[in-house]
Length: 112
Image 1 (cartoon, rainbow, N blue to C red):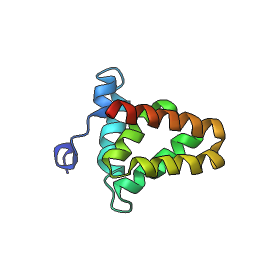
Image 2: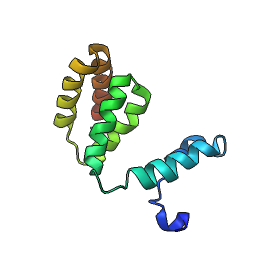
Image 3: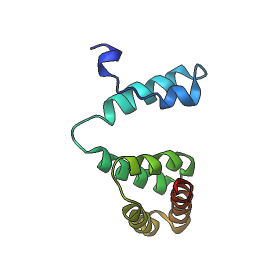
Image 4: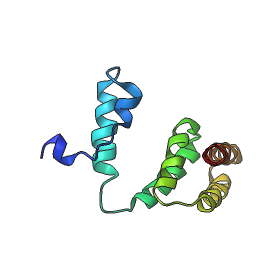
């Protein structure tokens, strides 16, 4: 199948890096979002929760900015995200949970 047939139209990598890092663009847009996120084994909602869990546990607040907003687009409610981050704080460290909750708070407040 050609890239056009498999593409979801995702251009986040291209938007972030343009021509600066073509490998990163390819693997982000074509592999991660066109292939992995489109697999049937988990819903996008569940993939978002798994991704948020990993990023919170690793303290990757820069990536959480995007993925918490994306989780909301994928049907995860703000109350569910707050509850997930509270749960994660106990298993991934309080500072990581606090940082992630701060990121979510900023997203929600800026969306109002």
